[in-house]
Image 1 (cartoon, rainbow, N blue to C red):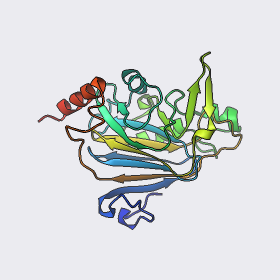
Image 2 (image 1 turned 180 degrees about the horizontal axis):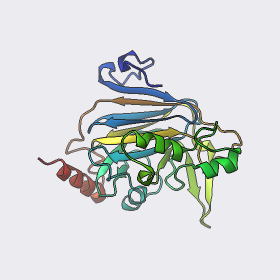
Image 3 (image 1 turned 135 degrees about the vertical axis):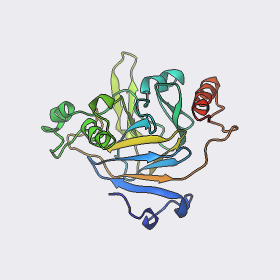
Image 4 (image 1 turned 90 degrees about the horizontal axis):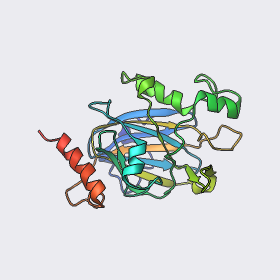
Length: 250
């Protein structure tokens, strides 16, 4: 449940001013949330006990036909393993969000969201009303609140969950990559709609439906300046930010 009013939040991180808070929520296993964040806002996700799985989608809040494109995010940056300094790119070549802080460094861009079928295979049940709901169905519930639907579920990122690709092309789930207290912080480079589901990863071998609490904190912040280190990290970043700046020209 979200903290309302947000100013009543407990254990606010020391580096976040309470007056800047706009969102504080902790998700248990199988729970989901969504929020529109204005350009410049920060989103901090905290893996409280070490087994959270933040399955994540993002959209242009003003025109949600534009959304996170995981394939371009990987391809344009020449890196399938996201971390601090990397961008989350839209399907129109713009920066939706930047990763400004990451103490985990191991996130999955390959497997996408769990489904009713995958959960039924793993846990015996997987329907949305069951004790073992999937991330895909949780995404759908969240999207419907904004007039969106099944066709708008794009490939997602699983933060705090690591999958490595072996030389033979097989996928290997790395459970040891996650630890209690790990943090990922994103900066909104556009007005974004974010959808988060805390559901077990599709490759997690644990026979129990397990995802420990995920804390989500949003707070106000400035738009990335012209001399921002992430903006200027390379020609691909610069071009994506130029596309984004052009979108916001009056």
